[in-house]
Length: 245
Image (cartoon, rainbow, N blue to C red; front, side, top):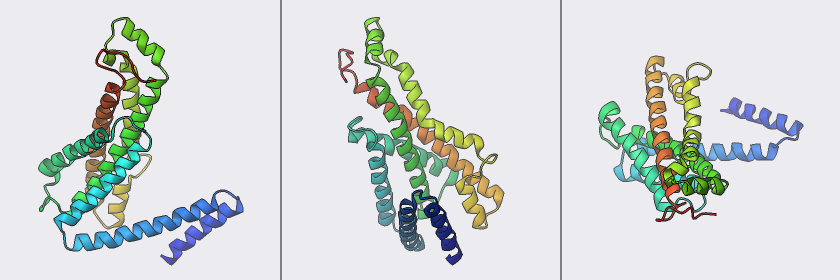
């Protein structure tokens, strides 16, 4: 650890020399050490003696952070209940599928499975919601005339915004798509590297990485589809009129 801190000190020295964000890097390193240290201590206790209530409390805390992250870029669209519904629904479906058909942990709330998987999937869902939702809201607000033209020519709301919604969904899944395309070729994914460093057989580590990436892809796709559908509905009234400026 001392040598690792030495590398951090060298990094700060380089940034100070170039007068490029040394203070922000110092804060980032400090927060990283405190946050990961705290997580390490808490998880050590939870993993040593699994407790359903404590495991669920940690998952709910991660859910709250994910909701705040997604909402911070979307404003009041969609409403809070819709955001929570998309997050919980997408992640729950993925976890149920993994638990019933792939991992089958015993007990089901085993923290070494539930906590890291829930964290990864909630983060993926929050990012997809933020990226796809922000893209769609921006596109719809800046394309009022085009949308109303489609409506005047007989298109329904879904037809009038189909192109914008498809672009938004693409924005939501693109980071995951890119990560999958270069996994194992241009880069070695984080889960794989962590397991190999911990002494797990590389092939077994690769299988776990595949599970993670496919699950994240599913959650990102479903979250993007659901959130864009929810947002689109809020831009039209019952008479199919575009009602957001």
